[in-house]
Image (cartoon, rainbow, N blue to C red; front, side, top):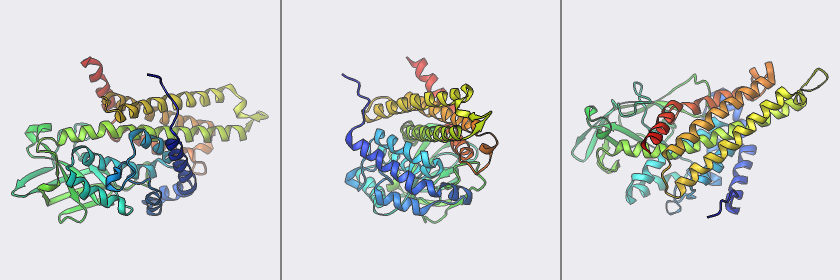
Length: 381
């Protein structure tokens, strides 16, 4: 079977749409919303208008039905303009994915279709104040009482948590059972006892809303449960194995932006009577950025290709996420170095690139966790 690295005509059109949107809609307001720490609803509304919001929802429920490679192509373009703003639709897709993986036909129609009818978001709530990497150590409790569950507990670092129409919440039926006792429940916005507190003072990605979610005797109908009791942990892990790939795509977009900004500055800035781009020290930095971008993009495409063909992809998504986020952080760091003192102030965008992309090394599983996933794959063979 031949290897084909070209995009289809539809993918090229999708890429052009996302690139134009990033340039015309996101770039002009990225710094403003970063400084205000405010969710850019006008941008979300325009994303909805052009069909790029919640675009992974299948066509039968009103979405575009984008495959993973399509999602990666779009993600790189949006993150090029602002990783923080890109996190909003990306986190919504994260919330949507458990419903796609484990929802019944009735649940898919009930939860997904409304997300395509207006600018609306979903969210995914796994992390808690006391458990990050140890995802099975949940303290949020779900107690079955007849035709509903009573939910009590707290979730932390939840993107879109206060804006979302509904949140997929992972809770334990019995903490002693660890991963075998986890249940996945869809909690709808406005449910009594459910509140969201916005987290302020983030280092980066300040345009996306990050929340602490509190559940106090929240009644959730059994019909809002995804899968069976005890299947919640598997649903969460299968979700993350897919959604780490769009994080990698966003990292590639940030790295590409870092290279463009560094190249532009290096051609304009003069030292010792010539542009600094003429110095080998600068040229090597630019070359290393491109090496990272091209290799990270190709591997991210490969991981997406595995997903789209229904092939095992957990280790590939871990490699893509860890590698791409690390080359993006280094690219942003070197872009600052090339800018010198100017790279350290907000007059130039490179300091924001570094602040934003640092989170890509942390959320959806730290890069240390990605290495554990990769090591287990190695040792299982």
